[in-house]
Image 1 (cartoon, rainbow, N blue to C red):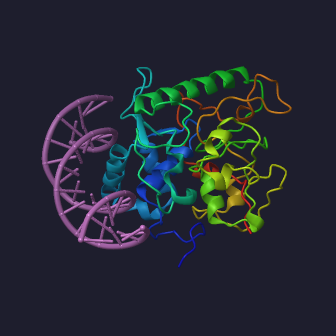
Image 2: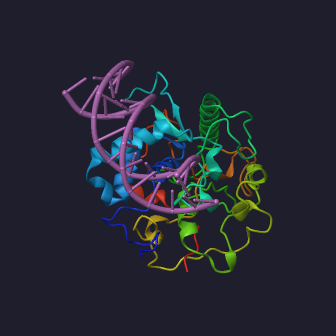
Amino acid sequence: MPRPGRNTYSDQKPPYSYISLTAMAIQSCPEKMLPLSEIYKFIMDRFPYYRENTQRWQNSLRHNLSFNDCFIKIPRRPDQPGKGSFWALHPNCGDMFENGSFLRRRKRFKVGGVQVTDPLGPSKPQDAAHYLQQQAKLRLSALHAAAHLPQVQTGYGLSTVTQPSSFKHPFAIENIIAREYKVPGGLTPFPTAGYPLHNQLGPAWPHMYGPGVMDPAAPISMAAGDYSAYGMPLKTLCPGGQTLPAIPVPIKPAPGLPAHIPAFLAHSPRSLSPTSPQSSPAAPAEALQSTVAVH
DNA sequence: TGTTGTTTACCACTCC
DNA sequence: GGAGTGGTAAACAACA
């Protein structure tokens, strides 16, 4: 059996469901929302299997977007002309997958059902959409404030933030990869320090956010020649380090930065809002990043 | 006209 | 066997 995460999906069907693939695509974008066409591009860029029979799988994917409550549709604003809406992950869908694995869902995410501790209160799609949009605005504002700082633009938006503390959502690319590579000693590369959401997500993902699980001081190394879940060398793909938070999180100052500048914005991509042009899919490699121990 | 989004239906598979 | 999940097909409407 090919081991998920290795460079084995060149033209085979990946072991991920459409929900997983869509979640990956959305999570790879700093805004955490993508139009349908960009989701298509993301999947085709990374999985050659999906460069064929596009009508079939794209229909299935659209079906999943509409059918599953874990995806929320965010309408374009009047100043964002274009076809279709943006799609985002519902902020509460984090524990949808069994042990965080993309290979199988624990349960179908249902708005209004029993959820993890909810930072948003009652779980309504419109609330989630509003929340995401507010967060995007917040990020954009903060980015403008931090415009004088050096920034690194990455392809699909997983920025190369070097700040050591960054929240990781189970849907984040790095988590997918990390899960697929067992870290010796159970070490996970996700520091606990930082965002309040850690406390809220802990009960949902104790294996990731629980006390004592994460070690912020542990160095993360990566051997040359290792490959990501997308069949690309991680070292090449992830020149810098970590990513933006996978879901919108409260802005928190980072050590060494002015207090008003959140850590993840110090090197954030230029596009932090759907109003900005989307990152080019021509550079999908940067969607991955390297805070993964691969041994 | 092509794309996007919704809905319904069916089947296969896995888990309990 | 039933429930849940995933994949596929198809029809239809709305929209750029």
